[in-house]
Amino acid sequence: MAGGENGRAEEENEVRAPLLAAVRRVARKNSVNSMRGEFVARLPEKVKHGVDPERPFTIDVSRTRDLLEGEKEYYEKQFATLRSFEEVDSLNTPNVVDEALDLEEQRQSEFAMKISNYANIALLALKIYATIRSGSIAIAASTLDSLLDLMAGGILWFTHLSMKNINIYKYPIGKLRVQPVGIIVFAAIMATLGFQVFVQALERLIENKPADKMTSAQLVWLYSIMLTATFVKLALWLYCRASGNKIVRAYAKDHYFDVVTNVLGLAAAILGDKFYWWIDPAGAIILAIYTITNWSGTVWENAVSLVGQSAPPEMLQKLTYLVIRHHPRIKRVDTVRAYTFGVLYFVEVDIELPEDLPLKEAHAIGESLQIKIEELPEVERAFVHLDFECDHKPEHSILVKLPSSQA
Image (cartoon, rainbow, N blue to C red; front, side):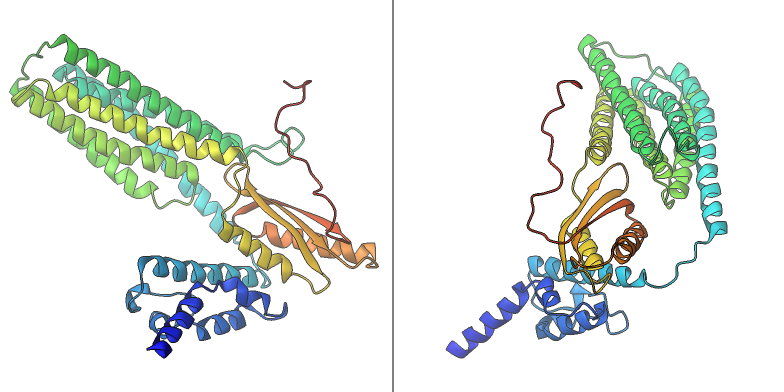
């Protein structure tokens, strides 16, 4: 019995042992493959069943046995860390940029934006007609949404063009931050729309005045216009969501939102006409709350990316692994810091080199490290600081308020 308890305790210790504990014992010259070999060798038998021999850096937790949810999450994170290390090692191989492919992706992104804007213009005209014919406040809410879609689409298109035209003397680090700013303005307009619709629908409920019933001709027009708008937006959502361009994905999110609002708006208008009049303004209120919640979250997400939020631990591990394996003359890694400044990360690295190392060689190590870090797709810019010891105070202080001259 005691032997069984000791064996279980050893297994639990193996489960809890972090991957980086093994990394510390691995020499700098060893690759992620040797690290993975040691890690897999130390896995409990119940976990090894989930390791795919053909894809050595992945684990299928559904094939493991008797693992708790927390343990499954732990091992998935560990293998994700190994995959990120593998990506770092692949930076040592030549990376040929396919300019033709980049131009094709840019052309597809611009095409997606253009057809989205053209569709918004056509659907706005149709919805205005549907609103006039039906008198439904839920349809009016959907029409207002299309109006603001057009305005917001113009904002995103201007954002895209602004990012393409760069004056390095006026904007020394480029204009990538225009993207989250444009999305914030876009999302703020959509949230404002939701609040306006909420107020109008609430007023309709308070007035307690049923609207006139729609005729058969009005219903036919309503069905035709709203279903056409829904299918067009659904097709645009399917086309735009696969894009790697964040602005196009913002369009995709808006198209998906339009599908939801069109379906709910049509259902509320029909049910309010056929059964109880208050279903129409109640549906509009539901749409308004959904709009406010959805786009307020988008505002928050993009605002946080502009205030310098730290990268997650997995990203810092990946950067640390890259730095410590970069060159044998690196004695210690003092600081690895990554934070958002728009869509991508800015990275700061402090490394210790031998005190007697010639400046020319030290500069070559630092510059090549900077270039390698900036090859990571998550990184926009890297700063590498070289030092001969790591016992000093941090190089930069953190301001907690603006200087009096700037307040």
